[in-house]
Image (cartoon, rainbow, N blue to C red; front, side, top):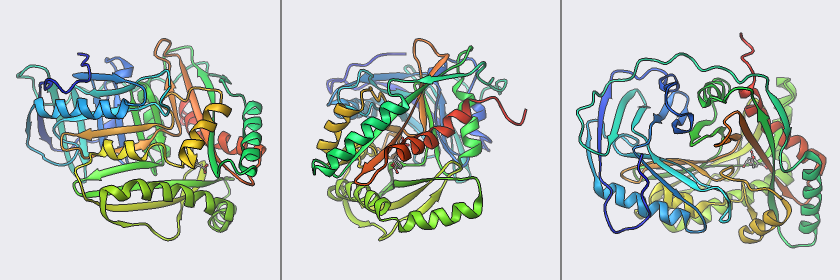
Amino acid sequence: MSMQPASRATPVSVVVRTAALDDAGSLLEHLPADVPHDELVSWVRRGDGLVGWGEALVLETSGPSRFAEAEAWWDRVRVGAAVRNEVGVPGSGLVCFGSFPFSDDSNEPARLVVPSTVVGRREGRSWVTRTTLEPQLSPLGLPEPSPPPDAPTDLAFADGDVSPSDYAHAVAEAVARIAAGEIDKVVLARDLVATSSTPIDPRWLLRRLAESYENTWVFAVAGLVGATPELLVRRDKGLITSRVLAGTIRRTGDDEADLALAGSLARSSKDLEEHEYAVRSVADALAPHSSSMNVPESPFVLHLPNVMHLATDVAAVSADDASSLALAASLHPSAAVGGTPTAAAVRLIGELEHMDRGRYAGPVGWMDGNGDGAWGIALRSGAIDRDDPRQIRLYAGCGIVAGSDPESEVAESTAKLIPMRDALAPDHHA
Ligand SMILES: C=C(O[C@@H]1C=C(C(=O)O)C=C[C@H]1O)C(=O)O
């Protein structure tokens, strides 16, 4: 591992080799047991995506300039990299993974990492990439499969910095501020701490999440693990896409009742209004970087096992060379996790929320040497404690608008915690 200060002065040199594989099979099953858990990375959806491990290069950065510093660092790595890539699709060749704190003044740094090994799969093509600091004649095969991960043991949950009743109070105060005309929408979150008697293995969580949440991107970067249904931005050659979510309903478990609820969600003026704020914030941020854009007029209902969301897929044609990370930086924080208007909403979060979100609700994802990549919003996730990996902090938040009810928002946040709570639990099949 090597720490690189952010400066444009010198290219960072790495040697990158990508070779095609016949079929990578299940990506998550390649993650090895014998590397430090916080060095495992993942971005997987329905079997496609990238997993990786080991740290060829790492950057830590924080504060308001964290995105700009990450971009500058990536430019230096791109310039200095010697790449041999026989696959040539986005995500092959040089790749970094990253995860950024939500707030400019978080105590937690952003982490960017170029893994030593990445295994990728996209539309029937598979590959492996090795990155080293010196040219090396290392074999480009896959490691022997590791034994499967163990479940956490003796799991216990405790309130985090924001208890459910603290949360209800904060929501009530936010509703008052909205009624006073200070702001239109603010997203408030709370946390929950889970403790196991053994270190929590991200491989366990990733497999469990991927099994149940196929409509999500299952991610891990530096101990932040989750399954997000919300894609902040993807740049794939010239095409930019974003999946915006806002407006939520809890599922009952009864399919027929849930369908009726989905219908009411699609007609609810409170949810449609909340959704509209979120879509507009994304379309406005992408406009300067695109030549044409498609914003569907009305949202669809995205079904997840725990909740349903109003969802809109925005698509645009890239008009400049802004990288996927630069686009993510210009979109963050969208109204889905900040509020409207953005600056006032972020200030109100600082005033009412009483916790450090860390990397929850920040961009998480990957980028390749061409700037293509995908960045999700780190939702439905938890951060494994760096000093005590038996502990994980889970987060969930809700968009508060005029008419939001504190108790319903507590219940909605509880529903949003289900994916991680279930993923931590011992296997129900066993
Ligand atoms: C903030 C979260 O979710 C966001 C808030 C939503 C809402 O309030 O309806 C819906 C999806 C996400 O954009 C979270 O899951 O923690």
